Image 1 (tube, one colour):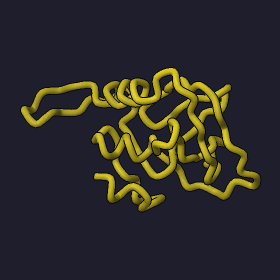
Image 2 (cartoon, one colour):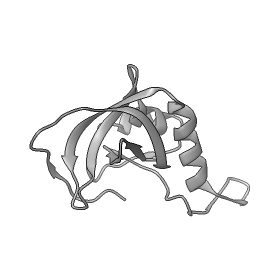
Image 3 (cartoon, helix red, strand yellow):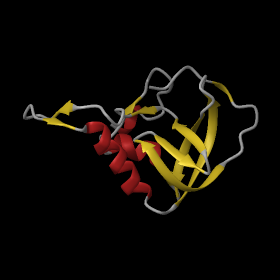
Image 4 (cartoon, one colour):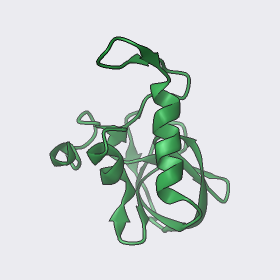
Length: 122
């Protein structure tokens, strides 16, 4: 869940190979980043598919994000800092907006409480 944010004083890009904490949290060089405008289930979350069967939707989202970024260089452009001290950012793999990609592939939702940037990606 993304918390209310405050503006970043100096917005310096964070670039490097990322590891994935969960579907909306990459970690680059010890910087834990919250992806702007999207939300994914937490890793332990269990959801039901259309047939009513349980599946680990949080793990599915995290694996999809990890597969998407692979070993590529990721660049995150800070937008805000949340109350937990995390950078809230738009992250890209090359020219591709990773936040938008997670929503368009149905691994994340547009988090309208904080932004409408990804509503059209559904």
